[in-house]
Image 1 (tube, rainbow, N blue to C red):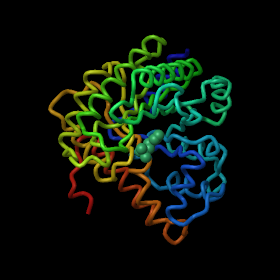
Image 2: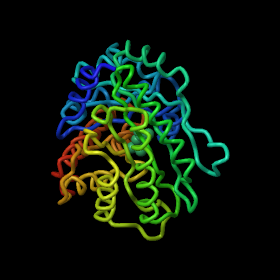
Image 3: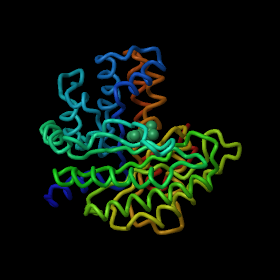
Image 4: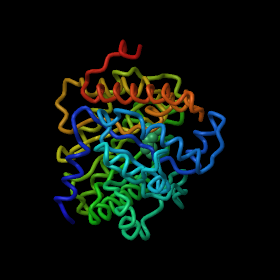
Length: 338
Ligand code: 13P
């Protein structure tokens, strides 16, 4: 493992007032997003969708890394520049989602497991030629009365740590993403318990596998009420419980925590991040965002595939990136939404 190579990536990515854009929706997920605005899921539409965001003037002020999906590494902007090159020219580090999606975990009722470890090292060498310098792997853990179970938590932690070790061994900074789903009727108390137990397992596995804590990024979900829970916690409660769980489980040696938005609306995702960064407790890590929907959702609706809407969509994306960047410093205020 070349520590210098990993450190260089970390230093470029982890900058005060900047976060990460997750633009790594798989083909079917990108298709769902496009279909929501009446667009077909074609190669060209997915390329044009990425171009809206990557070509937005000035995003490098707030975004230091972009997670790409495999096909996007080879797609080009309208001016003919390969996307990873376009990003690198702006000083943004291109990264790559390397997992191959979720399947049921056998004999673990309702729990899931992520595939993609076989051949990972070989694939990484190919991605490096396209300029990718960091990776992402997403584990999905549903919350119910029985999920995630012990085996679900243990197995997902083990696979996340195996992935992170392979990524670092090949010179890539791994984003480790254990996502506890917001879907369901669970309370915030249940979310807190499940998140703490999961992160505890994740860091135990990270240590077992010798992953360098200093050269990884944690991408967790927030501790939050289930979408269908009758009792929705306040933004202050979400921030306080999330900070509490992270302080109990995430070593201070980890340089950065970049949250996923996970189905929160744009405003909530920004508010929660801001409140965490205003916490009276000292946070030993950089605490920022790695959002997909909470950065791109409104811009996609405005654009809807029409060139006459492009600049309005890009303005919206620029604004969301800026407000989340301010939230990552605890300097956001809702009055800035106007
Ligand atoms: P959301 O912010 O839309 O949850 O996406 C983040 C992500 O990368 C999920 O894997």
